[in-house]
Structures are given as C-alpha cells and as structure tokens.
Image 1: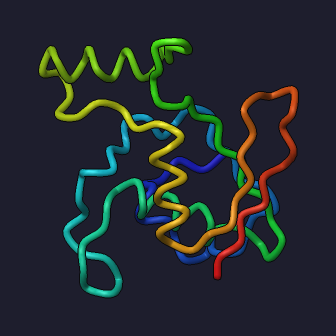
Image 2: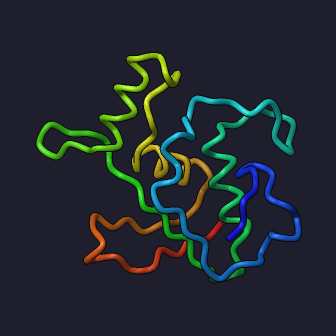
Length: 131
C-alpha cells in the first residue's frame, strides 16, 4: 500500500506494479479542479493527473482496476452521486463528485484503451494501455 499525493507519484514507482486498484477512491477528484502546471507546462485536471500517474505506475501489460459509480439516473440512483450533490448544495465541497463517465472521458482524451464492466459479476481485469 502506497500513501502519496496522486499527482506526485515518485519516479521510482513508474512501471513498478502488475496491478493497480482504486476502489471508490476517485469521487473527490473533480474533473474541474486544475493543477497549476503539468510537466509540459500547461494545466490539467486533478483527475487527469491522478489517472495518468496510475497508468504510468503499471508495468507493461499491467492491469488497472477502478470501481466507481455511474452518473446518477432516476431509474438507477447512485449513492455516491447523491452524496456529492448534497455536499455541494451545502457548500461543504465546491463541485459534486465525479462518476464513471468522467473517468471514461479522461481515458478517451488521453488515448488510453479501456474495458467497461457494469457489475462485479462480469468484471474482467481491466487492462489499460497508453498510446
């Protein structure tokens, strides 16, 4: 178990792991929160930065598994999405929590390949590869 800033993973951790997991740990990483600078000099979202570092920490052919709820829908309410909305309404947090669709959007923008599963019963290991 590694406890570090998600955007400042030590270089020695790059390519170090066969498996990286994140179980419901990304909700507070709003896609709208900006880091001041990336390595390339521009700005990026904290979510983007965290996902990039997770992928960079994988060995070639490694697996990244992320468990996160989908966007709240009337027919299938999401507990985490409801909590994020309520906390934002109360002013406890600035923006509602992110959801699976936000993670997928970041993966797509970074050119990462992914597989999506809608339930643990169907869950294959999710291989994530950079371009």
